[in-house]
Length: 61
Image (cartoon, rainbow, N blue to C red):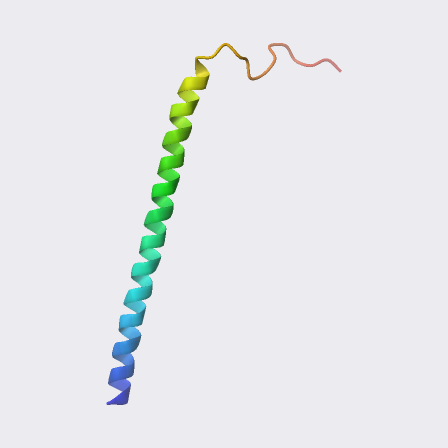
């Protein structure tokens, strides 16, 4: 009887852990998507500016 109860406790614990890990992955995925979206919108804004990111000619030695 104890083995059955122990197995039930272990199964519920594993399910709870798996659910927690899944929530962590989903949150991380949402944060990455938000960062990517913010970077794309800021990149569009900066691409229309007149400021050059790199000099036009190569540096001389």
